[in-house]
Image (cartoon, rainbow, N blue to C red; front, side, top):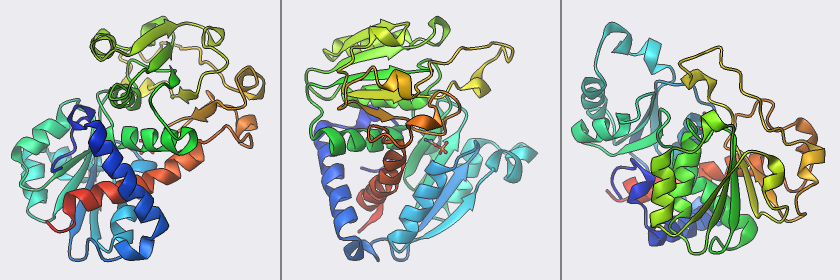
Length: 301
Ligand code: CP
């Protein structure tokens, strides 16, 4: 693996190998303490982030590497003076061994990879993709379900602009006998090209408009925030599908509730203590998955 641009580039074998390495990183952290000694990773974020930026930075530090960072590249880098993304990437690539990039343009990671002499890791490209989030999401599902083949997964919320959902459904399509329920308001439906892609991969995709259309025995509920920052019409009001204690109790004791976070009101705090609510464990696994990805890309290079 060199660049991480899109979930299109992963095979099932790639994921299994990343998951094995993640398990090793979790169980024997001392064995990886110097894996990135002498390496510098730049985190370049043109959009806000808590988890992705800090978990990548923690991952680099835990592997013995160093970090240079612009946490608000939109205003605090020379982008504000009119510098183009390719020029910025060409320059930063001369200072470091890999660039973790979050940017509002869907093609940003691809554009950056075309001019970069070091690996580019897509940490969220507008409403397009968020591949490292999807890898950690599938890793989390595997931790709880011990398999991916044969699972039924419901994705909820903003399926139009939600880049984590776009990346997740692509990875799920690598597995056999997958059923995906897509619960959203009409205006936030999963784009047709993703639905067509899932059909070509033999994934059953079932759009729905109410929580009760999802079977109670669904294996995974994957909720997402409405990405209001992406709306051209800022007055558009979207009624959320709220998961609270009462609505969660409609589902099986074995259903897990995930969310890439941050959440707003779409998951009520009264479910946080429920053993099915795994979203904080999910974000914690993210750091280990990113350690594994960084190790695969950089160690020994
Ligand atoms: N899940 C996720 O991408 O969170 P941040 O926006 O906080 O990085």
